[in-house]
Length: 311
Image 1 (cartoon, rainbow, N blue to C red):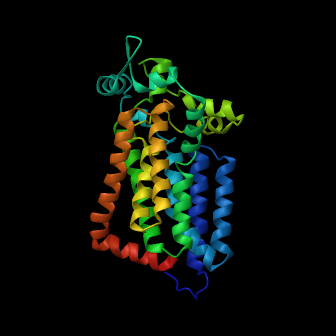
Image 2: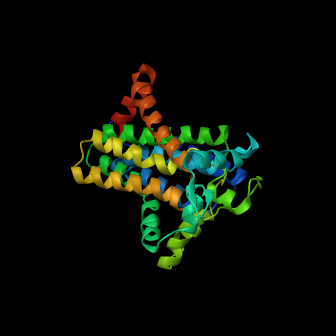
Image 3: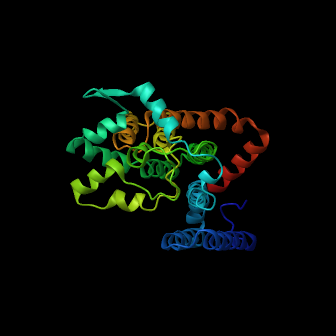
């Protein structure tokens, strides 16, 4: 690693250029380059080569970059090519555990909310769901910029680690979301396009096209278990507590977290089971990282070296 006073070395320069070239070539070959790929590549290279402060930021952001690449690259081998898709099993389990009776019919909570919804709830649901990635990333940047870089690095690595655990869950148990069972029944139909489901009411209410554009780019609709929507704010809240953030930050994160959990079910994007497994995924990732990986001497040396670099 370089010291703060050192200039960019030739080795570092070619490592970044080579790594970026490999990323772009593999992406173009297997899933096709899109505008956002090129935009992110250009922005990252600008950050890295602009100077030492921005270079340290570029290196610090690597866990988030790897998360984005990993999610996008799941298009190469969809999880439904690895294991059978669960549609009916999850639906029936949800109904047996959390079913509600409405006009004499037993419904899953998502079916109930598909039939009973309110404009105010639709508005807040959209606001909460728009926070699921931006708020944790903004929190991470705040940690970095306020010199809490040890906690920042732990948070960023756990964020990536939780995602990788969740992605493993997608491949171990491919599962359809509740809107799929409601709209298509219990027979898996491959290459089903993404569906905005109940979040479409936010778009209609505000006149925006936010969620339609997001879910139109969904990498895989059969990735409901675990709900990573439910996991992210758990990670952010835990590290906000570790950072000893102000009470109003803890309160705000708690409200957003619970709001996302509720929205996941209210909008028919996740079963309650998915949400509970997402929470478990986050807690498991934090526990394994803090009490497992950080206790391994090899990983600890890597972490300490990484930390010194971004200091």
